[in-house]
Image 1 (cartoon, rainbow, N blue to C red):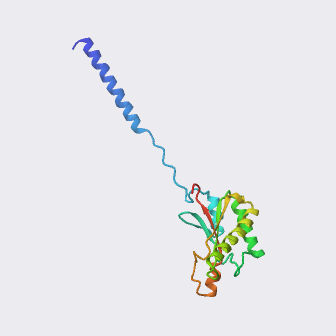
Image 2 (tube, rainbow, N blue to C red):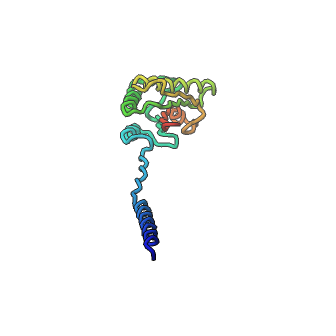
Image 3 (tube, one colour):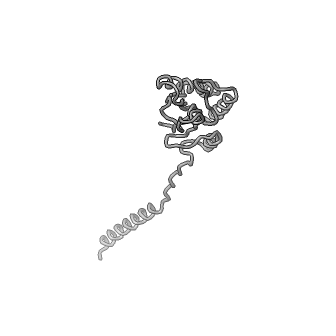
Length: 178
C-alpha cells in the first residue's frame, strides 16, 4: 500500500471513529424528565387546601361549592342573615388571600312562583352573595352572577324540606382559561 493510500485510509478511519463517538455521546445525553402535573391542576397546594376547607369539590369545570345547609334563603327572599353573611365574608377573604379572584355565583329557587319571578329571584340571590364576596376582597368585575330559577333543583320540590334545600346559591371557581 502506498503512503498516500494509507494516509487516506487513516483519515477515513479517524473520521468514522469520530462520527461513531459523536453518535454514542448523543445517545448518552440525559433527557430532562417531563414536569409532573400538579395534583390540584392549575391551583397551588395552598389554594386547594383553602377550597377543600370551605367544602368546594373539584369538577370538570374547576371547583364548585353547593351552599346547601350553609346558605339557604327563606321563601321569596334574597336576604342572608348575619351568621351566613359572616361565613361568606370569611370564605371570600380566604379565597382572595390565596389569589383566587375569579368566580361565578349561581342563584337557585324552589318551584313556588312563576318561572319569570323565580329567574329574577335567583339572580338577586346570586347578587347578594356576590356583593358580600366583593366586600371581602374579590373584585366585583371578576365575579359573574347567574340565575337559574327553578331549572336546576338539587332535590325534588315535593316536600317543604326539598324546597328549602333548593333555595340556595352555588359558587363555581372555573379553571384558568375557561
